[in-house]
Length: 316
Image (cartoon, rainbow, N blue to C red; front, side, top):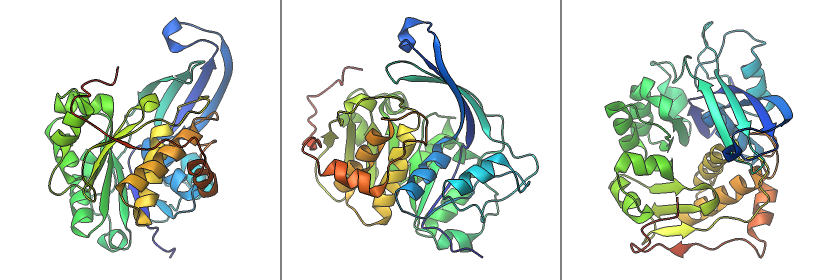
């Protein structure tokens, strides 16, 4: 039996049909430049990022039972362990159609009528040998597994993008590392400024709350430091932002597993995500650890600044 990876995850796994057009999405229409099919999904791409960065990652959500299942084969090719994932003949990926504009922005249309989450009786023995569990919004389907993982001492890293009511509220409460897109966090908390949102999401049990805001950077609060912080964005040539958030989550999880404090986790994750958008596809441009460290050591790497409550709006 393979060794249990340090970082496990379950949630969305997808096959994406991606179309690149010659106009920004705001133009309403544009000419097709390229079409391609790629493998994606929040958690699956985050785990692929972990593996690319040199960590050990394992997908433990539902997978198809066929040995030649395309999703299974892609995970293996990406360096993600699949031996501990439950199998079911009816398991299938989320199917997505993604349009990427000339400015790198994207629109995702998806069909998520699929088996998501993981087996309700997933093994405590496997969970207990890991360090971090990455989850997305679909973890509401197997909340008991999340509770058991937390009780076993795993760091629960939540990538939550939509709410399904009380079940999502419970899931968010279980996450001690909560990483949300700023737009969703605003809707969920009904607060406007990043500072107010960070405080609204904080709990005594939290280790960190992180708000990602694309080209405007990252806002965060950590248990191991005082104050609220804003990390400005890296200045890179944006080609395709698909998978950038997922890369951020994977890189953050790896930095967490390596023992980095909040500021260093966020800096490492932000640099990895910035590098990932300089190429096409959700996984094709995932960086290596060496590339991220070189990027962070460059003169152009941004420094975090303390966030003030007077900063009531980020311009979004």
